[in-house]
Amino acid sequence: MDIVKEVFKKVSFNKNKLIAYGFKQIDDHLHYERSFYENFKAVIDIDSQGEVSASVYDEDMDEEYLPVKNNSQNGEFVSTVRYHFLALLEDIKANGFDNTYFQSQQANRIAACIKAEFGDEALFLFKKDGDKDTGVFKDRTNGKWYGIIMNIDYRKLGIEKDGKVDIINVKLKPDMIDELIANDGFHRAYHMNKRYWLSIRLDETLIDEVIMSLVAKSHDSITITSNEWIVPANPNWFDIFEYCDRKGNITWHRIKGVRPNDTIYLYITSPIKALMYRFKVLKADENGIIMKRERKYPKDRYPYSTLVAYGIKTVRGPRKVSTDLSELLKEDQ
Image (cartoon, rainbow, N blue to C red; front, side):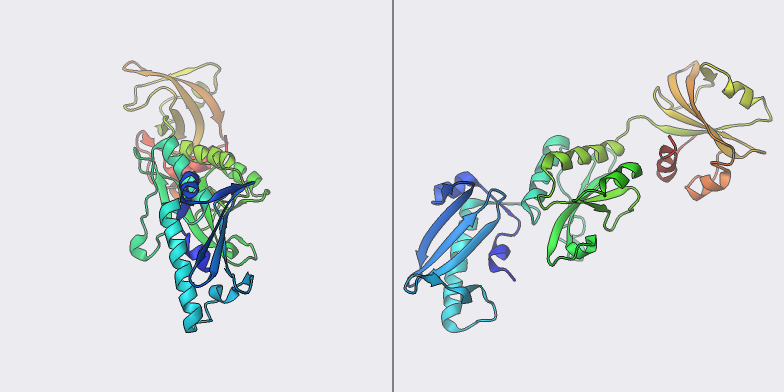
């Protein structure tokens, strides 16, 4: 265990506080030296990303005192030096750092950006299971998740490297995920549906702006303002195909809850029993609906059996499209 990293877990450096404490700015890092306990000296550096490195030097011998970082050495003298060294680090943490949610500086910056952009703070829903590192971001209006920050082993991402890394899972379109995973920093989602979720490493491989642009897309994906409907149409009552295939917009009777910009999928009932048309609603009021045809599907593309598999058991009247079916249909746009 790295005793320095252990002290500075879940905190972020505050430059102004550290300079007030006595740190000096040298090039791109902060530097501090202080003598303690019987001619020992601590030398502490903090880089621009907030990573802390600290060493102890024996001033009498003018060399680094390595036993203080070796936990297997527990003699009385080295334990006393280690105690005073850790006390100094804890004092620096208390006076020069701010408490944060996550292990890495980038994870905490992203969490701060999410709060500023969307007003949502991380929710630690799994504390009762002993997991204090997994923070969920969900929309306050509909309760849907759009980001999950967690701390996992590198090897769970297929990286042969010791240690752990913070990641954020975001929800994106499958074709975008397929493109992104060809680049460093992106992975098929850990512990989520790999078709619709992407894991992004928060280890400074990618800049914050790139990550936040994808968080925004994930947020948009769960806060779409338009609705999607399945509406049944009986081919035995009239020639629905002739009506839907003609040029121009078509009219439909009023459907409660349908609004402009909603999407309507027409389900052709028996004997066809398949979803075959997609329309965009242009106007909806007490007089009815005007809508524009956007797509006609082959009758074997979305048969009733497919709808059942994606959560639609019956289509006796207008109804909302299930989340799973919506994802499937969006892939076919």
